[in-house]
Amino acid sequence: MIDGDGGRPRGGPLAGVRVVELAGRGPGPFGVMVLADLGAEVVRVARVEDVSTGDDESATERALRGHRRHDLVTRGRPSVALDLKHPDGAAAALRLIDGADVVVEGFRPGVAERLGLGPDLCLDRNPRLVYTRMTGFGQDGPYARSPGHDINYVALAGALEPLRRSGQPPAPPLNLLGDYGGGGMLLVVGVLAALVERAVSGRGQVVDAAMVDGVALLTTLLHGMRAEGSWADDPGQNILGLAAPFYNVYETADGRHVAVGAGEHQFYSRLLALIGLDDEAEAELVRGQSDPATWPAARDQLADVFRTRTLDEWSKLLESTDTCFTPILTPAEAAQHPHNVARGTFVDVDGVVQPAPAPRFSRTPSGPVSPPAAAGEHTRKALLAWGFSDTEIAGLLTSGAARQAPS
Image 1 (cartoon, helix red, strand yellow):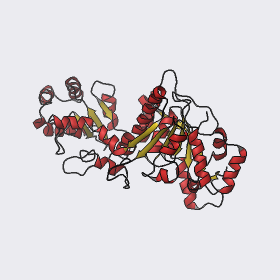
Image 2 (image 1 turned 60 degrees about the horizontal axis):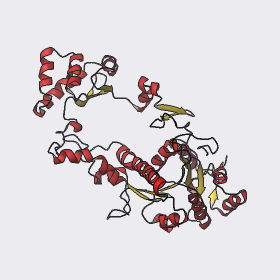
Image 3 (image 1 turned 90 degrees about the horizontal axis):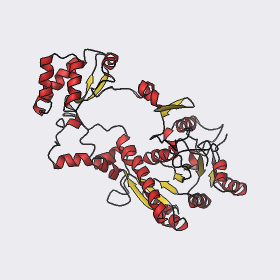
Image 4 (image 1 turned 135 degrees about the horizontal axis):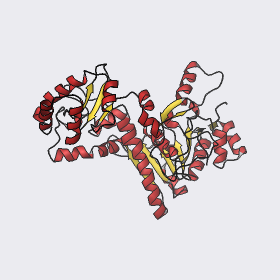
């Protein structure tokens, strides 16, 4: 098994699982990153157009190459550059897929078939293959062939509208909900489930992972609350929408913010006691915890208190207490927080700080993280590792069906 540098051995619970990734954007690379983090042997098939041209490359090309070196969701696997529109490039991709357990593609519906890499052909050649299709809207339905991005899929799934406060427009949570939570993670679940089923049946299958489906799945609790009448469609009325004083964010004296999630009675009582409220005020707020009519005034009262101290002062007072309190950290601060340092939640790979693989395993821990590969960086080495001969590789490079990035 080869690591993302084309040579080092890998470890992890997915050691021995071979994955071909037909390079795309967004959820596909993230999902495959997770598979690679967990030990799968992945080869990423990049476009030949993305390969650096060497010393004569333009400033734009150099900038793009620099971005790709920090494209952390492509970490942990070697890169082979193939022209999938070239008959020899498509044939080479098919040979890689023949030797794989999993293939992941993120094209619009119908594109893989036009390239001669569709699931029917691939499964006919490799009946044990888990053929995974990652899209925004899915393989069928009125929107199936429509373009879109994270914000569109979250909106259509009904998850964007609730992400707003009264009088404000919806605020997408970066691209974490569509691309990664409802997309890449759904891809991983589908792959793992299909591999488990294959161990029983001996047969592969097609996994249709759509971000709209995944984001909708993440809203299951919300739909249950609506059905029982405990979710208000108007913003500013729901606990999870930051209506309650005990589940909210508050500004500090230095313009930073803290998060409070003290939903349980005992945690809320402890919080109110520690922040310095007198006994009468504390008792009044505790009595009103279950009464939404009291929440706006209570929020204002707590907001006034939290503005009296800085983030560091509140952290020293409240961290590690039974108050469900945390400081709201920047990404840089999160990597340096003592809890995350103690657990090794972040790692430094070639000077780039990034999240470590997760989850953790007692018997088959994941191997070390390797940096992202440039497009085509391992074309020769990875093709050799996947069974191509030197002569065959030379032919692919000469014909333009494959490209090796200059060293």
